[in-house]
Length: 494
Image (cartoon, rainbow, N blue to C red):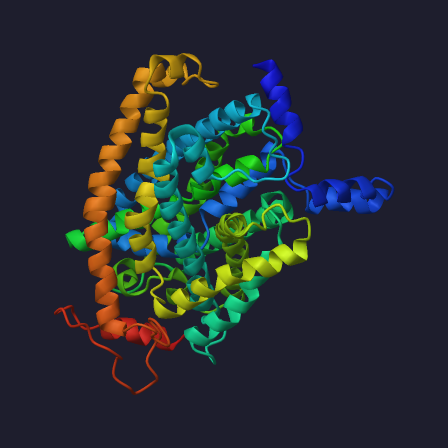
């Protein structure tokens, strides 16, 4: 095992040959070399922690109060704690499977120095091509829609600073900006970005908390959630989505010098994220109550101020970073499909990556439903990608006594070794299949279709206030109540 560890450590030093040669040239120039290491070359356990924490909670921070209004305070807090634990467990499983796959391959003298290992390759190596195909389909679709959600969020947020342009126009602009992520080679190179990203979400979360408490409760505030089963499970699946950000776990691990250290990193990242999501969602819900049911973006209810503008700008920059996080694995898949992955020219690889951005841009314009789209992606894609498939893959990989005996990593004693870990996995699969995919899928798709009926596809400005003196835009078909005057007036003074 010691020799394997040494192999893992040496092989993982560089993801790309051009980075290694760049590092060698830089040795002559101390300042340039130090600058590059500080901002560009990240591979430590701290880098992985920053990547996980900043990637896990981005725009979803702004939709969690909306989820609390659907769930009620008690269920909202309980689901966050529960799915936080569940997400940390399945991230741990993914890390174990990655180490198992990598160790087996390196015993066969495979060199990954110029190749980024991805989740579908882990499934292929351990369980065969059918698992690979299923994993690849779910992972790519989830990351595609994850990138779409970041674009929608950019347009939704900037509107609260500058409403001279409608949200669809802002989506065009931010689509072009986000396309620049094609120039970032891999997760190694997100060192400074993931650090700044976490600072940005931390500021925004505490701004939401403090601003809501200082604002106080609106007149006649009601906290009637949960009222409808559809809304309850929509809210629950948004939280499932929040803690399902580990679809990029394998790529983040691969960017580490010592991937074995990853096991508990996701749990520590989740614990930190909970210190942001719980106070902010609870405070905004306490202050605005049922008003949030018609305002999926928490910014829309808080009064305009320099602090709010600052939070909006920071979230915009963060969404650009998270877009890169979600899109980079898609770039890798595309590069491998067209045979460009091991090309040494970054400019050629960047040009080859551009077609990946186009469908993302298009889908963000078709479905601009900030909030409801999170729940739909959560129930239909996240449920399988990062909960069900990893739990099943772990059980099938280690189903024989020989596989369990020769496993690179044995399950920890506190979960009850193999029997305990298999029991937890069966629970994860059953729970997520029934509650996340079953009830959650039904609820979020009902809500999503309702948004299409209400606002239409390609809507120019989703949930924007109507111009003064005009009636509310589209009214729902399904007998839903008309937006209350309180809501509309509140929008006007933004």
